[in-house]
Amino acid sequence: MSAPKDDIVVTRVDRDTQGKPIHEATETTSLLSAGASGSETSSCEDTWPGYADFADLPWWKTPSVYWLLLPYALFTLAFGGSLVPKLNLIVDLVCQRHFADQTVLDPAFVYTPVVLGADNPQCFIPEVKKRVSMFTLAINLTTGILSAITAPRLGHLSDRYGRRKLLAIASVGGVVAEATVILCANFPWTFHYNWLLVGAVADGITGSFTAGSVLINSYTSDCTPPSKRGVRIGYLHACLFTGLAFGPLLAGYFVTWTGSLLSVFYVTMGCHIVFIIFVGFVVPESLSIKRQLRAREKHDREQEAKAVDNSTWASIK
Image (cartoon, rainbow, N blue to C red; front, side, top):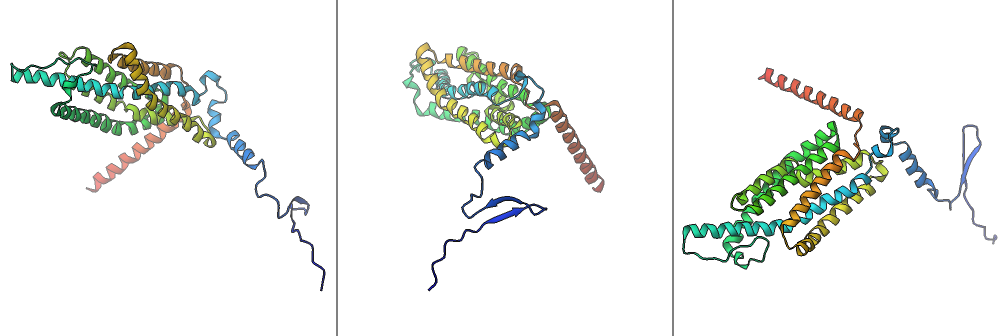
């Protein structure tokens, strides 16, 4: 019998065009070297063409997601913090009007006065609950439908005229909505609670929370290389859910501390105003003038092509 053979190690030698070996690889050599992934990532970042738009700008004019983390946190805190207080205020306003209508129908009708922002157990009756549910449905439908229509259009406009202006506009509707709430609460017999629908219309036309979130994500994509976009957008989602989670909690403590339900709406309106000022005057624009002009030219060509198609169809008819 022949002696057992030793294990044979197969070695592949790659050679260049002149026949010289480039590197040696064995069966135990890893397919990817230890620094391959890192080198490829850094190479992609260094060659990302988006850096050319901000190469010669000072740091205070260089766009980055970090410019938006604090204002976006305020934006989401304002949105989350006003949800529950607004619902409680709507219940009180609707209840107040309901009992006032009852006294008109029946002058002998007596009820416990409704104090806005206080505990009003007399309001927890089926008639009031029905009117509250129908009114909140009208508000949510108004804001939702209008924002669904306007948010995509605001996104297209931001491609041609920059993200910053449209971000500020998206929060203007929030200021109008909070202002109508304050007016209806301070002067309930002058401003009917139906005026809250005006605030819902203004909020929806400007894109509401939906447009703000979409435009902030677009801003982040403009100034972040593809290899880091997932992480940067993750920062934004952290701000989003932190604001939605802690907004109602902070609003509850604020009402307890001040003893006034309306104080929450003053604070949320202030958050919207701070967001508008910071985004409008401090945050750098993420789209360079060159990219904006390119998007406008593309839009003009598309409009001209549509006009030609329409004229062709008209001539056929």
